[in-house]
Amino acid sequence: MAVYKLFPSKDTALYSMFPSMNTGIDPINQVSNLNFAIDSAPTVARSIIQFDSDEIANVLETKVTGSWDAYFKSYIATAQGIVENSILEAYPLHDNWNNGTGTYLDVPITTDGASWISPAYAGGISWNIGGPTIGYTSSWNPLYSPQGGGSWYVSSSDGSVNYPIKQTFNLRSDKDLTLGVTSMVEDWYSGSLPNYGIILKWENTIEFNTNKQIQPVLQYYSIDTNTIYPPQLEIRWDDFEWNPTSSITVISQPNAFIGLAENPGVFYSGSINRFRLNCRPKYPAQVWSTSSLYTKQYYLPSGSSYYAIKDLDTDEYVIDFDSNYTQISCDYTSSYFDIYMNGLEPERYYKILVQVVASGSTTIYDDNYYFKVVNG
Image (tube, rainbow, N blue to C red; front, top):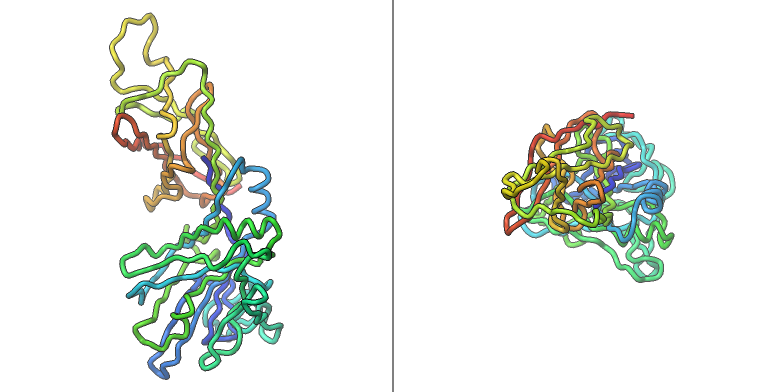
């Protein structure tokens, strides 16, 4: 299976409290509703993120085989105020916008890009207001903010897809954001909607809420973070193949030796590598034979063997085991899987893990299969 990661071409946050402020190169994207004790006026923050249309088209046209799915992922920096079920919404943006060069609370405030009141710059055009009956809309509260905060589509142009896409957070839930945005990417790719990116916001019942018990704040790393957690668009598809020789032996026991046959150890960030696996049972059956058992090629079982990739320093999965998208294939040579290095942060080390389900047991093989991605 295959997972291809794309990183944003631009992102910024929109703050109702600072209507003309741009934060286009700030390391944080924020989605929040806050009440400040000085005047009890609620303030809202939303985030907008865009991925390049040509990069999306290149992946779908030159790399994807068969059906595919798309997921938007954003990684949490800080979270507070999530004391009850809170729904975050994602819509496709209606207006084109400028990234800008600001950071939060610059002195003086930077106003050369998208902000609460304009998709362009301070004094530029305003966000389109729209309305649900014409396919796109916007929202703000005139008691607490000027007009603005972005504008977004509520459906595809033919009405076949309705938005938003939602994720619910609560006190104990994981605060990383993972949204299935296949329909949105399909709309962009087909031309049903222009690709101006995604807007992230709390649902309307949370935004501009004056109740001091409703103050959810999620801060996510932006594309300008100096960490390994920029937002990303994952394109996942089924590239599983099972084309072995006419006569093969599949490992049917949980105890096995699995080694990487092809691992140069260092890869450029734009490369694609096929990792091949040498496999043999740890305790082979005793048989009379005129050849060594250790020269025989074994295969991992079809449909129950998977790979994963971990960042070596943080020990976090950058590609997790997935029964749909990380199955291990095989051909006449061996079992194998392909990794697209573009989605891995360069100048870091990674570790490969293999999971095999056999004879009712699930075994994860972690035998220090390391490699490094470098800029190139």
